Length: 437
Image 1: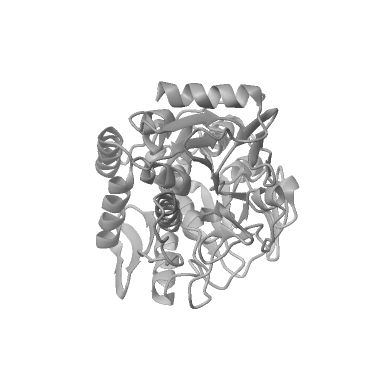
Image 2 (image 1 turned 60 degrees about the vertical axis):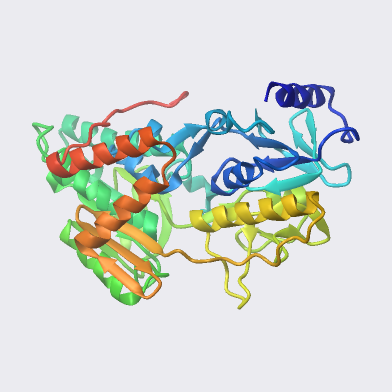
């Protein structure tokens, strides 16, 4: 490992334009998300150098970020240092750097003044928030993609209750105790349910001048139903359970404006103390780096083998890629899909390095749809089987605990959930401030 890191450091510092000839082929993976990390781990026993590059030093389990945002889990429960994950993988080095471009002719990745040569490049740079042409809404209505996003949302939610406790203005108190979640997909549904439970259960006895149970939680969706990718029966169940928990669900409602005091919608004005965005995603700038064709969401159009058309040494996977199944349907932007792509690309690269025939086109195997609505309520679809209620919630919980990295994190999350279930208390109600805020 030390020799690999030393070699990487020497080449990066000297900024070569071409890879040295007398060394093992190098696979550079950009992004330590589900796809990139899976690809790196799958190349552990392959005769190549692996360099994993990310601007963060940790891998984040994004499906549980909403629980960090609503004080149910700590950031350390859903994130792990990448170096620690890969420290026993002798052919792999990790570089924390912010990639700004790719020179395909010279086969180098550009990260500031650094030039990182590659033989194979895997772009797994994920996606960010899409505000549909209104990026000015981002500072007011943050989404959930990174640990910083989750702690920022947590701060905004808890600060709204604190400010409501202080104010003497009843109208302002009502505004502060109104929380709007924009987007009725899995993240929006999970977040709205968690905010309602935090207000009505966790914070119910914490304040003296306000009653957190009077908080108004709204979930706004532009489409005619929630969870559009789920069967209509489960969508209707999710809406019914959210409303039972006190969430106001507004369907066929488009957001037309967002400001510090609230938001304007097709159904009228809503004054709100905190707004969270869960309505859409946009791919990273990878298409611009490659000079490649992209779709409306900015995802790179790839071949059935996940390579860049005309360049079989460049792979694009996960939310960065626009991938289609054999029947023409799009592969969803889900963690299991990204992991399957990462494993597939590793197999292709390993086969080529051994001089063997590479696997045929990528085939996505859908493993199911899961979304929780809160305590004792979730919707699950696996093949022709659907689960809901407590059974669905239990399955959702077990599945997410299983997917976490490391026994410590599995035990910590399982304990926190058990404690929350028994006591209705969330132990991470900390208001932290990011630098400059």
